Length: 284
Image (cartoon, rainbow, N blue to C red; front, side, top):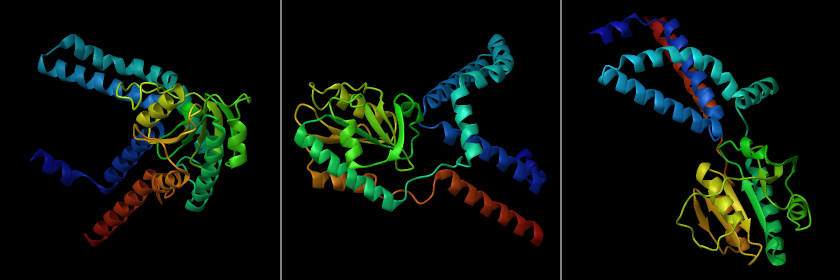
């Protein structure tokens, strides 16, 4: 009965208020996804939920008091802990790029062609390479570890970066959602898996597996020892690829971007719900 009374007492203004708050929290969750902050948020929520359950079930007054009073400390700690994320949020908001963008399909096809041309030559010369293609997950934390480039993707640029005598060859080159070569010499997390395809797998291949485990990024690797071309996706590696097979995999996993980002879809659904509520209010 209380639930029915609550639903009947909700006004149109209350629904708009709730939707705005929900959209705000959704935007925050979308913004920190794929970053190191996301793991911290999950851990904090898990600890709070577990402590709250124990406090309710076993009537732990001290734990309940701690949960009640820790909110004040969190209000001060959160801006300090998430300072990099808050700064990027304000920068994107100021540039009008809060919702994010993705490279159009035509640009992605050009990027695929340039990568295939570069990897074929790198494989022939046995020059090691690690190219990361960003998809939905944010890679800003890893881009900042390298040297910022922000240039167009070309086979010549990739060949120059991974030339053994350059300063940028030791690390990963990351292509962002705008279709730009964001940075080179980036440091990636190594895989923690013990079930590796080969025990002789080097650091470059372990890093490619590692970034594919913590994000949905697609990685192209050229072995410095054998010249073999490999691709990692979702924590799995496919090795000994020819140029044709590489192009086919890139077309499948990278060549067709989504037409809308999740925040845009959410805003469209919100607008549709608001219109429906307005029609219901007019009819009543």
